[in-house]
Image (cartoon, rainbow, N blue to C red; front, side, top):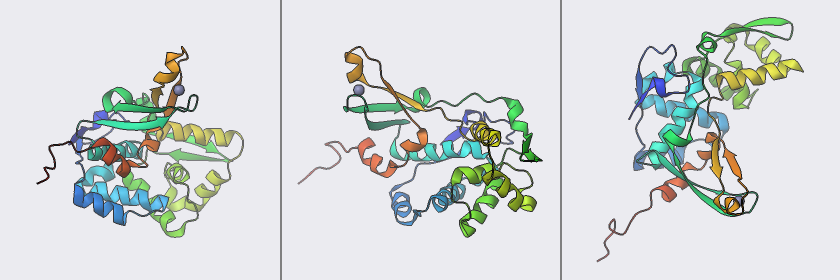
Length: 249
Ligand SMILES: [Zn+2]
């Protein structure tokens, strides 16, 4: 399936191509994924990227800010043939289970992006100035590869932050130290960079119908990332077979 780059969280800003191709996994691939996908967080992410790149090499030229959405999209079209996704959540107020059908176009939104943000920035971190770039998956892979190997940092969000720094290949240790050792307003700065350059998906809102009956409007929020954790289990919830699929003799 073709995704227009203008429909990605970056809005397609500065992309040199207008679309990418992503297709649903078939049964063989789902089984392969199930058997081979590493449990380790970082290795799993790397595995997802390589899987996407196998069918669409331009993944490496996409921005990291678009990557999580592309992974979500790949999983969504694998479990659903019409871009909808059934989720079950328990309302924390009344403990009733809520069944919600998420519709990609209606329920999944990106935060609006300022084109200025896409040209990078200069930041003051600690006593130093650093240049910030908008990393592509290719830029990010160089950083991720290193941490998969040496495991000195295991938090994916921190590794993404480190990949924002322009000179990470020559100043890697210095940048790692500045990021990990950040204090006070520098922590706020790093959080702001994270929101600006990576967290582009709005949380999904789910209203509890049971609570609404009593006049209380209770809305739960879920992150899109939390939705895809169990997506293989969700294949069976989302793709039940009906009576005409199997005819017993
Ligand atoms: Zn409720």
